[in-house]
Image 1 (cartoon, rainbow, N blue to C red):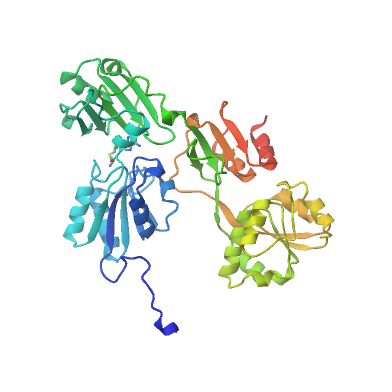
Image 2: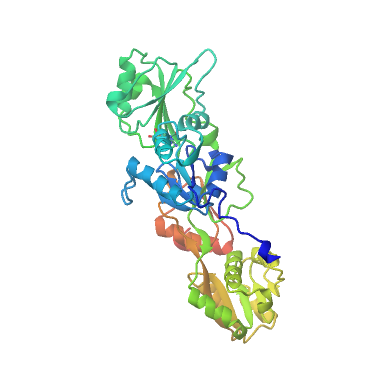
Length: 464
Ligand code: SAH
C-alpha cells in the first residue's frame, strides 16, 4: 500500500504558492498572557520575526527559525522597511511566518504598515490581537482603567516624540513610550489644567518578574528626579490608589528556576523566572558514533540522571539502533528519575540507588558484584569526576560520553536578583553555571538545592 501514501507539506499553509503571515501580539511579558491562537500560529510557523519587547525565552518551545528584528546594540538594526521586506521574502518562499510583536500589534505596533506591504504583494495574512501593555499593567498593578463614578473614559497616548504629546480630556490617560521623557509628558498634563493632586503611576516592566510601580501626585512626581527605565507606562487618573505598590502580583514569590520546576512551585503561588540552565542535546557526533557502533565492547551502562537517558536514546535511535542492541549490558542508575525515564524505553535497571547521592555508587556496584566492568557513562559535556571516580573503584574502566550540554540562549537578559525571593538549584552543574554569572547570592534570598550533592556545591561556591 505504500504507493498510496502521499506526503503533506511541513506546515498547513506551506505550498508551492505564497506563504502565509500572522501578525500577532505576544502580550506584555508574562508568557501566560499569550493567546491560544498566537500559540497555535507559533507552533505552525516556519519563521518567527520578533521584537525587543518579546522575551526570547517565550519562543523556546517553538521549532521555527527565530529572527530578532529589535534594536539591540550587538545585533543588526532592522529598519521598518527591512522588516517588511524580510516578512515578504520568507512568505514568498512559501513559508508560514509569524511577525510577533510585544503587546498588541495595532497599539503603537506598526502592524498597519506591515499589512500594507503584504497587501501590495498579494500575500495572505491574518492578525492576532495581543494583550496590550496598558491592560497588563492595569491588571498586574490593580489600577482599573475605568471605574464607576471615578473614571468613565480612557485614552492610550504616546509620550514620544515630545512635540506630539497630546493630553486628551479623558478621566484616565495611559502614556506609552515615556521612559526618557516622563517629565515632558507630566509638564504637558499639568499645563492642560489638571490638578496637581491628580494621581500618577509609572509601571515599569509590567507583568514581568521585575515589575516596579511608583505612585504619587502629579505635583510630587514633577519634582522627583527618579529615572524611569524602559519599558514603562505612565498612567494618570483618580482611579490610582496610593496602596497599589503592594498588590497581588508583588506578593507572589519570585523563584529563579534552574532546570525544571518541581511540583511544589505551582503557578498559583509562585512566579518562576527561568534561568538558562536546562539540558539540551549536544554531543561530539564522532564520539557518539564510535561508542554506539562499538557498544559490544562495553559491559555496562551507567545513567546518572534522566537527561543522560533521554539524550543517549535520542542518539541511539538516530543511529538506527534500539534497546535490543543493549541486551548484553548491565544497566544501572543512581537516580530514581533516571530509572523512571528508563522504564519509558522498556528497561528496568539492574540496580538503582535509593538516595540520589554519589557516595553509595561504589558500594552499590560492589554489592552487585560489578567489578572489572567496562562502563559507558553518558552525561553532560563536563565529565562528572565524582561519579566517574566512584565507578572506577573495583577495577572498572569508565568511558564518558557527552550527550547533552547545559543550554544557553542567545539574547537572555541578566536576571535582576533584587526581585528574586528564592533560587532553586536543580543540580550541581546549575550552581556552577550560576556562579559563572553572579559573584554572590544577595542576602535574604532563600536557596533551595534539589539534593544533598547540589547543596554541597552551593556550600563550595558560596560558602556557609
Ligand atoms: N504594541 C505594544 C506597544 C509597543 S510601543 C503594546 O501593545 O503594548 C512600546 C512601549 O510599550 C514601551 O515604550 C512601553 O511604554 C510600552 N510597554 C510595552 N511592554 C511593556 C511592559 N511590559 N511594561 C511597561 N510598558 C510596556
